[in-house]
Length: 115
Image 1: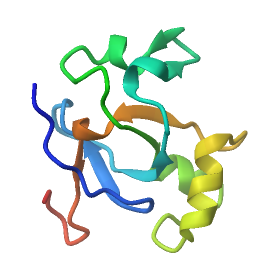
Image 2: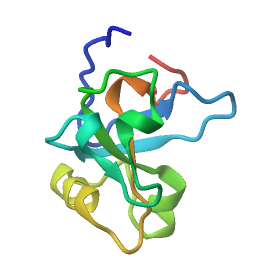
Image 3: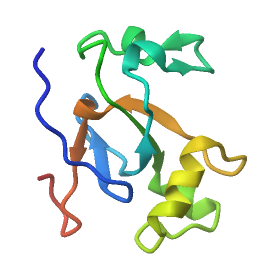
Image 4: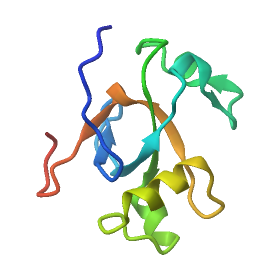
């Protein structure tokens, strides 16, 4: 599968394009410097590439947190500075971080629809 160019930035609202509705919104926290076949999902003991076989093994990997999780930790996702989001992407005891191939994420127009 050829991946489209993704211009996602930390702070972007996204949904998982592989999930059926309803799809919960997440916020991009940052990106791994390693490709999907080198990023391990600790809870599964598998790489992002192995868990997402429909995406390129060398795919760019985004770290995201779901909006509800951020708000439960007292972080307002729409106002959080990029450096705060980036710091969360490395480690957080209060927010669960998920790693996705960036191409699996679809930008959300904050007025209510996908872009």
